Every structure is written in structure tokens, then in C-alpha cells.
Image 1 (cartoon, rainbow, N blue to C red):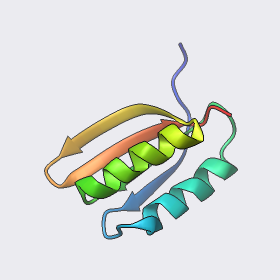
Image 2: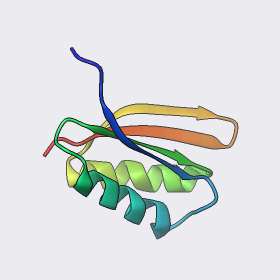
Image 3: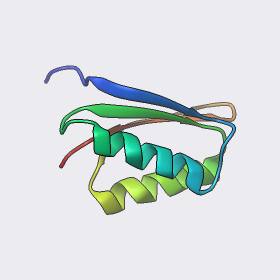
Image 4: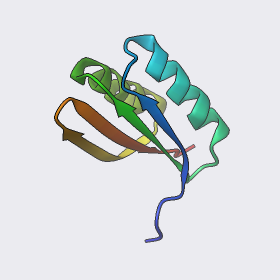
Length: 79
């Protein structure tokens, strides 16, 4: 399997609610199928919202890590 090409990294550690999801949705729309987007979040609730959003939109979560109060998700555009 080849390494995932990251189209964009979004630092949304100072945002919550719909802001990070809107920014992520825009990046995923601009990315090519098979590319990834990394998003760094500052709270667990927003991370959970992104996980639900990814499931509903058919994007694949290929990375989900946390360190302290920072949560990093990597999503791969599937379609």
C-alpha cells in the first residue's frame, strides 16, 4: 500500500462547534480522491463530531491520535 498524500493540514485547536467541520469539509471537497486531510483539534467533543461527520460523508478515518488536549485525525477522501 502506498503512503497517503496529505492535501492539507488544518490546525483548529482554538476552534469548536461547526467551524472545524466547515473548514474540513472545504478541504475534503478540494482534495482528490485518495488524498488525505489532517485536522488537529483542541477538544474531545469536536473530535467526536468530526468522527460522525466522516462516517456520514463516507470519508475514511485513517488516523486518530491524542496527546494531552490535542486530538489529531487523518481522513482519506474516498469518493
